[in-house]
Image (cartoon, rainbow, N blue to C red):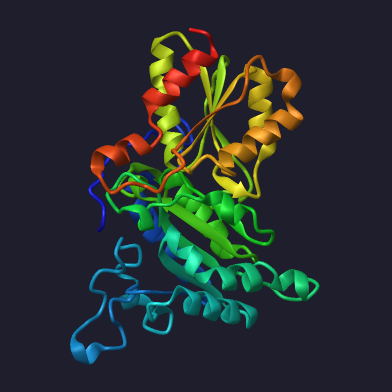
Length: 358
């Protein structure tokens, strides 16, 4: 497990007292459970990636399921489903995504472990020219039901080439969907929805969320792709978060509440398609907004959301749209510099106080 993030716990996302069978579960455990459930539910689903099977197929070397990938996402699956459905691949993201496109066109549902979100760039031709465009170019006669999952984000010492959060680059491409869960409940629902979707979906798992614990229902369920959610009701300012920055927004909202400021916290969840309505409805209620995005600021999701608000809710704004993002630099390896790079709750609180003239 390539992270040292301290485990934290969340409340039941379905609300206190909700009578749904379930249990506390870590984000990575919810992810693994969902993969297992979807493999059982649909025999056309299979998983491929580097070390996902721990060397299965090379039993003569005594290597089976050594770790289930660097983040243990697929650990234990090879024993139940075998090497035909849990496939180790060569070290080539271009090859595995290209193979997944071909497999999807023939009627299967490949799930590809890309390890790190940064590595989507290695397979960009396959994503941009094949996965995103095939259904359109064949007039809707084909389906491309591919799920790609990868770990994103800074804060765990993985340096500049393994810490990106450029959701906006993927969201820019018509034909690709991209989601970013923010807790164990949403990763279970969004991953299941992605695997069942007939279009290519990229699931971004922020490394700082992997050890987060929270309530997860026992039964399989989906969280609709293209819908955000409100995680906290408020009236003075809207805080918009995504992936890890939703946690940051919740922390900031707690601190602001102590200072008499009521924050409405919106969790984006889906970058493309984007739920504009939930963001606009919140802004129309609070008249002020701070968007928190770990990505660098130029052409980011924060910029896109700010443009949507300026275009469709300008008359409701009592102050300029504010963004709290990473700086326009690569992610530093130095721990003190990396800590400064990531948007945090104090930065959100300070921006909000300035916005409110406090």
